[in-house]
Image 1 (tube, rainbow, N blue to C red):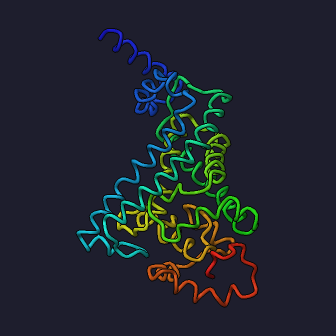
Image 2: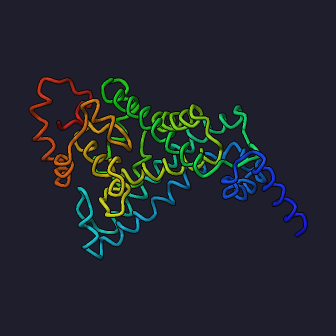
Length: 308
């Protein structure tokens, strides 16, 4: 008890000395994490953490899928897909989960283990302030969004990249939550590199980086969930595209290349408008009709899969 009180007084004096009393809110959490540094630097932790967190965050949408088989009102929020029998739904989820697990086991786990071996971990004494934490996370999201837009656009415009890297992800024309990571091993690794690079360029505190990766995973799942829910982030913050925005991309294989925000597609002329997104509720037929004339004469790298 005496030692705990002494440590608390020392933390307060340290923060007052550095002029950062706001960091006291996160310091206890950061102290607990620093005490587990041997576990946190394990070479197998990043891949296991990413896979398990992905499954955990997908669980609410699996519950929606199951409830939709018995409570038709839930199906009103589906973007494209009609309700299906529970057994078929479970088979689809299990099959997707197995594909992702195999790619993590054979590719992502060895690659991240090697990265953990060569990186130099940072465990600063002080936790970030709440304002710094929020600022770093938002900056990372914006930078990742820009890098992903460039990479995603390139994969659709360069035939070799599309066939070898991105085509696997577009096998899911109608998306559901798990499909956020149902991609080729090369694409999974490239996206992890973009996320790690974003945090490195910003120079995040490790606590900010962990929150960024967690939020990044959730946003990817929400983009692929197939539901336009009233409490979704794009409903609360219109700058986000959300599931309708990304589902439109999966329907016609072009446009809406940014993962989360809308501004890059607005600026680059690849944005599919609100009416087009609404048309995606009918299987994308409305989108294809509206964009067919615009796409005449253009070269499409999506090969046989493209319906535009």
